[in-house]
Image (tube, rainbow, N blue to C red):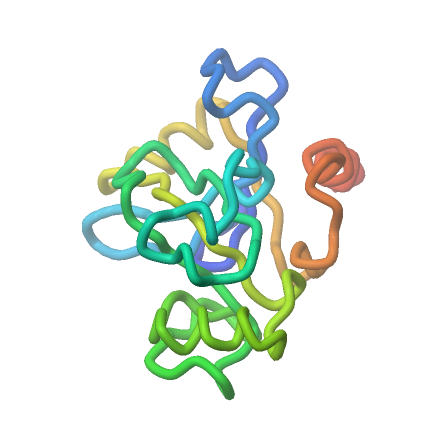
Length: 169
């Protein structure tokens, strides 16, 4: 089994019987003594940032359904620590969170594009050892995100492309 660490990509196994995670691609952002946290990066939310009440002045920008936990909160990952302060490095060049006001400002003025930031409603969470157990039982297939830039890949075919990459091993 591959070493699971921040920056790892999980793709749902073809036989995973959870409809929420059907053909899901998850980017792991954090692993600590309490468990793991990640985001589904290929499940577009039906509304944009500007359609949320608190961001109605913003321009239209895609949101993703990051997972079933805390779906009322926005989380984000990005490549722009030069523009967004206080983010924590997951693995170069990807950062988790930071100053949301700066992120939205740069989205609105066009200095950050969809290829540099992803916004999520909610996240996926696992208690300590739970994710490792799910990987061991075959629910998740593990890839190293350093092998490609998922920010550039089309989400409609992301699962299929990564599954083919995983099969080549």
